[in-house]
Structures are given as C-alpha cells and as structure tokens.
Length: 126
Length: 126
DNA sequence: AATATAACGCAACCTTGTTGCATTAACTAA
DNA sequence: TTAGTTAATGCAACAAGGTTGCGTTATATT
Image 1 (cartoon, each protein chain N blue to C red):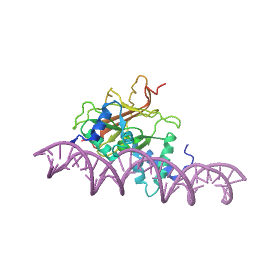
Image 2: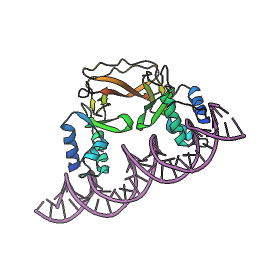
Image 3: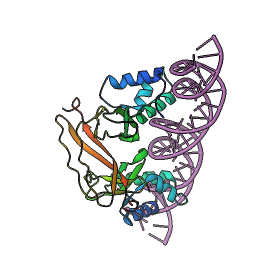
Image 4: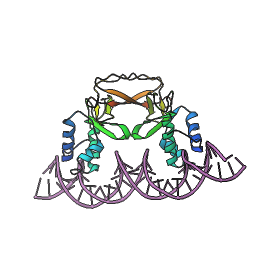
C-alpha cells in the first residue's frame, strides 16, 4: 500500500496525531472533521497510516477503533505493543509507556497481545 | 434485572455454556440457534446472564462480543478477570486460567482490565 | 382456571465501518 | 508549464453486529 501522495487529508490527520500523544478514535475524527473530509477518506487514510507503521490501532470499549502514533514500527512489522488506558469517566484513551511481559503458554504461539485497562485517568481521579 | 423465569432460551443457552469451557460469540450462538430463537432473544438472555454474574463478556477481534462462564462472580461484582486467547487460525476463543498482575499506575484508578492474546491455539499449533 | 407480567418474535432502526464508481487533484515527465 | 497518469476523494449504497418498540405468548402465582 504505502502513502504515496501528500494530500490535505493526510496532512491534517498527521498533524492531529503529532500535536498530542493521546489516542483518537476514528469516530471522533470523523465527527471533528465532518465539514472538511468525507468519512470514507478518513477511514482510508487511517488504514494507510497504519499499514505504513505510522499509526497503530486497537479496539476500545464498545468495539470502536482507536488510533495512536507508533514508536519504532515499520510497514512490515508492528512492534509497538503496549497497554492502553481508557478513562471510564471522560472517555479519553492514551498509550501507557511500559511493556507487559508476555506470558509463555505451552503449545501456543502468541502473536499479538491487546491489553486495555479501564478506570479513572489523572484528570478524573479525585 | 435478574433472571426470573426459566424459559427455553435460558435453559438452552445455559446448557451451551455448561457443556464446554470455551467462550462463544453472540454471533455464533445466533447462527447456531437461528431456527429456534430470535436473535433479539439471544442478545437479551446473554445480557441477563451477564448481569446475574453467570456469564462474563469481552470483545474479540473485530469488536464482536464473546461470552463465557464466570467463576466466583455475583450479580453485584464481576471479579473474574483473566486473559482470553483467540486463535487467529480457527477463530476459537477460550479463557486462560492464570491471572495477570495488575500494574499500579500513579494517580489513576484501575477498574477493569481486558487482556486479549492472539495467536495459534494448541490444535492449530504446528 | 384466571390473572399478571416477564419474555418473546418481528420489523424497523442505529452505529461503525466498507465498497463501487465517477470525479478530482497530486505527482511525473516532456 | 503544461499534459497525462493514476492515486485519492466524495457520494451513495451497502454490510454486520447489535438495539428498540410494541403487540403477542408463555411462565409463574393465586
């Protein structure tokens, strides 16, 4: 696949992810950019950025897709396996920087691990 | 909420979960029982069984909902937090019996943790 | 057996995400 | 700089998982 052309959509979305370190849901981006880009475009650009190893995606609560910047991934391998934290109060999702030790399970080959931690974020923590 | 009446749907679904220890997706149950029950009924019964602490649910790949039997949960509290394993080859999902140590994160309150491990199960492991 | 009402079936709907196709706009090279 | 190629876009229609409203059925109670 690969991002070949620097279009407005690519530029705007990249800026969005570079300006903060939190994860953003496809849904939120579509709402936010409703007047600028078609949802199809946004889905396609996100797909591509993921293929290129620039973003990674994961599923949050209710099965909706979230995206965040990758660290150290290439288009051939997504190495950036870390937990995500979703605040049950404000809905915010961000990447946690520590890595979780992958358990060894006999006779199984582990390929991916998705760890979603939910609770109250720093802002909503009283 | 609470399951009040012992209907056929409740009976059949409970039997389904008692006869094996793997997780079953709502989707699969609907397909399997298509000629017997309406999908609305199946969704509602699963909801109830979850509320009652008999089943627990989690999201698998593609955001579809899976259910499995609980161990030691009540209608007021779901304590049964363990990882799930989804085989990327045959699609089978089951509960892993070990618990994962919850990390402590400063200034955040952790309430739920969802760990989905994906790879190749015992049967599909070559 | 009569009654109250939880549970059911059906159809219609909602949400997130995808696909086909005609149009537009980046890049390439003359 | 312009002409040509084709990737990227917008639109509309669709798809899948799941939910809702409401009239009907069946379970439990008396």
